Image 1 (cartoon, rainbow, N blue to C red):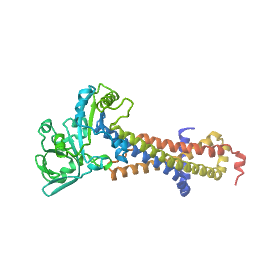
Image 2 (image 1 turned 120 degrees about the vertical axis):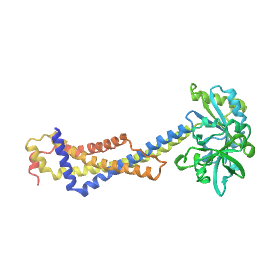
Image 3 (image 1 turned 135 degrees about the vertical axis):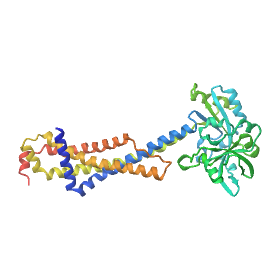
Image 4 (image 1 turned 45 degrees about the vertical axis):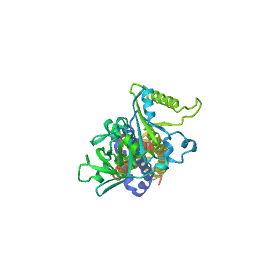
Length: 422
């Protein structure tokens, strides 16, 4: 079949669509629903995959965190066996520095409030003049934590130094949202604010970070020297240790070295389970993979049903078209059209019908992605050429698959019977 014949058959297909607008619209609506759901969900997931990967990188791609509780402790009731575990001690960090040559950096830090520990869920507030910032997340940090976790990057001023640590200075680095709330019209650096009733000099402001999916981020965090944190909040016993493995050492080898050192340090029996947990920012990727797996499965079911309904509609309208154009088929065969020509004609019409639904679905999916990105800036939905090509391929495949039977039936008609048909 020549290019001209293909073009002519496509024009015939569009004429058929225009002649039966309502019937054609009802036929392609299933394909539109199926392709729209695939494109919109795929664009959202692809955008979020990039966002999660970037977030993991910001939290330290080679960083690990040592904790008494597992990461899942914040998502449910903590078992009694876990709550009875011995607290980590800041001196454990020094022990790891001396015992684990594969570690590049080790830094303990404290938190107030502490997730998973109801005894330390106090509220932090910072005041300056008549301004108030409440629900602040307080961290006690050492200078090395800024190296371990890139999120602790300072936009203005400076981070905590060893000089601050050695002299237990009351200095504080605040998040961007806290700075905007307390110091809307002045430079916060050098100002003295009151953190939970105590005076602290503001020495820095973190880079803007609204948090993961609009949740708490660096914008709501305030950091003070770890020595000041322990001095002012001696009741807090829950500490964490962050460490980074040397780049010339595999992260798994470095992690195993820390596990062995901590088991010795905490005198865990040879066959006993670890009474501590180590996790990395990869837990975000793993959690996200589980969530998107369920979402992809649900979307696949919805889109499959839509495409099946659309495909059946295409087959139905093509069978009706074969019946309505029986005389035309007979005339074409009588003047020399081959069976392959008739089959190709109806396959092209079926494909054109489904491709029209696919293009509409792609446009609607792109509109949904744009709307989501506009209304929810922290959900960066991105429509890639790959998914556009997949949408076109799916719609063309539906047309070919469900259009073959009517096309083959039209090609098999006897021209004599067709010419006598009324």
